[in-house]
Image 1 (cartoon, rainbow, N blue to C red):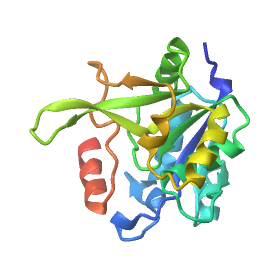
Image 2 (image 1 turned 90 degrees about the vertical axis):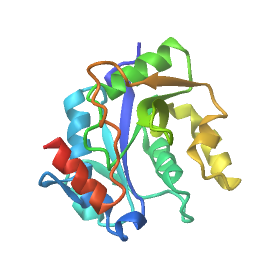
Image 3 (image 1 turned 180 degrees about the horizontal axis):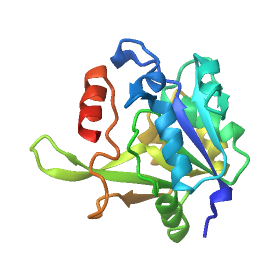
Length: 211
């Protein structure tokens, strides 16, 4: 069984926010509070992790005001979300690292516990969340959420090699390792838990439906 103190979490807020017009997504307000602070609060409420870090590449003082350590991308050439994965693995002092993005303010409170239980039960290297999403035909189907995952910190060397070889896709890297897929589709699970706001319109839509 993996204990909470064995897990460090990192919130990914280092993206360029291009689909939001270049704004710093993690600092956009959701119900009167910055998105990244919502995510931090959810992680603290859930109680499934020990230390929480934050990955950001601008407005570092604003993020530091949340009371957590803030680390920019380790690589100069932007490798997308995997840059944040790398930063977290490099600064993590526990055996496991939980990755979450900054733009899903309704993430499950028991996310860390369920991923940890699956990783341990399946003796996996990675545990990844999956949630119901409407497909092109309108039918709901489980879809993996690769930016919601629990990693063994021992995977750092593998990820360094992958990104140095030009790899950028999370799925392509996680496919190299034993991955436990964890469905979040139980009756009590919030269907909007993994909805991420990529545009300001989506953020406003989520805000109106979450009120």
